[in-house]
Image 1 (cartoon, rainbow, N blue to C red):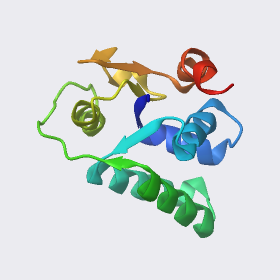
Image 2: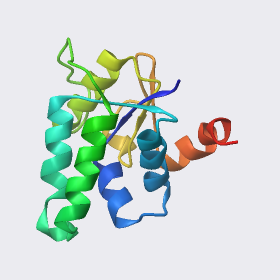
Image 3: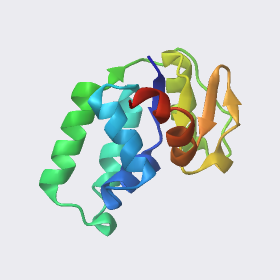
Image 4: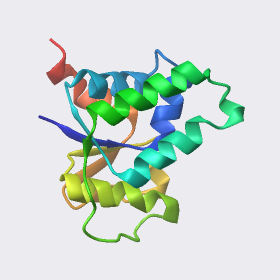
Length: 138
């Protein structure tokens, strides 16, 4: 099964645009067609960011999204500290990808990440949906 780490901007975009590629990636993860991996730090960031007032999401939508992620994701504990992103806050995603042996890290901010991190390819949601999804959905 395909193993993924999803950047926070994908979760936010999925909530704001429920039909776009970020929402499609999240739906694949929630459905179990791909394996979503998270860490405690990533989950905390998801929660902090999607609760920001500027995104204006209803509390029930936030709670449902977070509960679903918490219950469906595979939790890992990073074993090494990474400092390879141009935005230091994004290193947690590489740490998770490393611990999970993820195939993909899906982000809307590719410029903050290296193109590859060990065996993990960093791609956009649109790239993920065009490269990977056709092999999952039949």
